[in-house]
Image 1 (tube, helix red, strand yellow):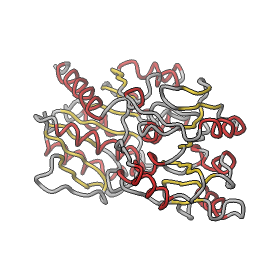
Image 2 (image 1 turned 90 degrees about the horizontal axis):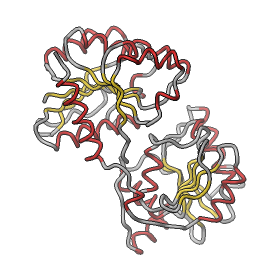
Image 3 (image 1 turned 90 degrees about the vertical axis):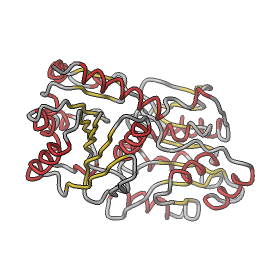
Image 4 (image 1 turned 180 degrees about the vertical axis):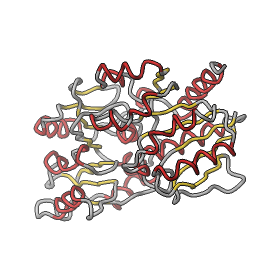
Amino acid sequence: MRLVFITGSYPPLRCGVGDYTAMLAETLAEQGGLDVTVLTSIGAHAQPEHAAVRVLPLVTTWGLGELRKIRGRIAELRPDLIHLQYPTQGYGRRMMPSFLPAAIATLGIPVAQTWHEPLSWKGWFRYLPNALTRDTLVVVEKAYQSFLPGWYRWLLRRKRVEFVPVSSNIPVRKLSSTARDDIRSRFGKPGKNMIAYFGFVHRLKGVERLFEIADPRLDHLVVLSKLNDDDPYQHTIRQLTQAPRWAGNVTVTGFLPAEEVAGVLAAADAAVFPFLNGVSLRNASVLAARIQGTFVLTTSGNRRGYCVEENTYRASPDDCSEMRTALRTHLGTSRSGESLEGATWHDVAHRHLDIYRAVLLAQP
């Protein structure tokens, strides 16, 4: 099977969907019997010829002017199936990616799309061209269609909708006591609890709440992310790290390799994700902390309290007082076991293979 992924971002370009695509493409290529190509933005690393996945960093802007170039390269590759990923940071606000399913359909090549995020009302209109094509839609939220208005679900009626859970891009790390102490001395502060946050920093993540939930007299915050002072929200977070109350009690790591992220999450006393809209199955950053066995504090709109099997406390998204109490109650609790791990990348890849085979079998 010749498979082509199209994504606006791919490593080393920073994007959660790009990282997801890389893990899926590489895991599928390991299965054997697949020729896997990724068509993506200039700035991604082209792989050496002997690599399992061929990466083609072809696209400059994702504007409509690039559509002919992409369509021409697809015609040259002659894939059996194309799998498009939405959204990605690389697409920006360009509309051309939304017209790709229709453009590819004119070549007679079957298409699968993955929509990684629930749509806002702006997204409903941006994704209209995606919604109107007859193809397969993969979602990473089991109840994805319930987040859509009835008229939009009606538009999707011709699609085959498949749910595939996400897996973590971060490996499980088992630490010796020496390794744990070393990580805590590098990123934390002697005599204080180490509280970690991992993921991109933007408003819906509620990162500013970390500074209300934790206590600088007792805790040291480790923000496993990069802060760009040109971004107004991230600049605000930078200012909070430097405010008198927290000065000297916060480490901002920048982007780290996956193995190092795993080590910090495994060494932490808690990982806190105070999301404004609540946690969901697609939040791989939360899964990355949970699989280490570390106590996770997050928010939810429909679940409350502590789950022993997941070592996770879900608070109301609007209740920082509840989050403070939960942090102090469960801080330092650790667990291990299969209930924490969720789907592996091999599970995700095999599920995709089943979908691809069904799509190809349904072709006339």
